[in-house]
Image 1: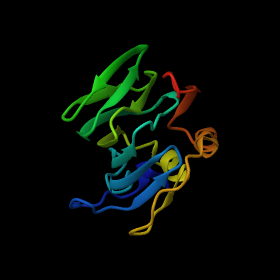
Image 2: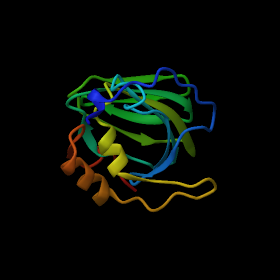
Image 3: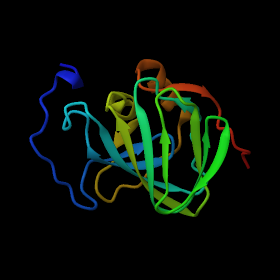
Length: 166
C-alpha cells in the first residue's frame, strides 16, 4: 500500500518533544510531528534540531513543496541562485523543482519543516535511523543520504553545498 492509498488518521495531537526521534545522516535530529501516512499523504511535518555548520547539498524536491519555519537560531538559505539569511520566526518556501540548500549559522537551530504533499517521506526514513530517548546523534554520512536519494523519489541532489566550507 502506498502512502497515497493509506487511510488517514482521523485526528492527531503531539505535544512538544513528542514524535519519533530520528538521526538524519545529513546532520540533524528529526522529531516526526505528522507522517505522510497519518495525513493521508497530504503532508509530512518534522522538527529539525541542528548544530552550527550543518549544511545540505544543493537539491530539489521534484514532487513536493518544502517550507521551513525557524523556531530558534539562524540559517543561510541558498534558494534559486540567491542567498538569504533566515532567523527566528522567518519562513523559507521552496516550490517543487526549485534548487535550494541551507547552512546553520548560529550555534544551534531548530525549525519545523513541512513537505506538501508528503511523498518524500521514504527518502527521509531511509536516510535516518531511530534514536531512543537519551540517545545522542551519530556521525554525518552524506554517502547514506545520497544512497537514499538514488533509491527513493522525493529528492534530487544537484551538487555539493553551495557555501564556502571551512
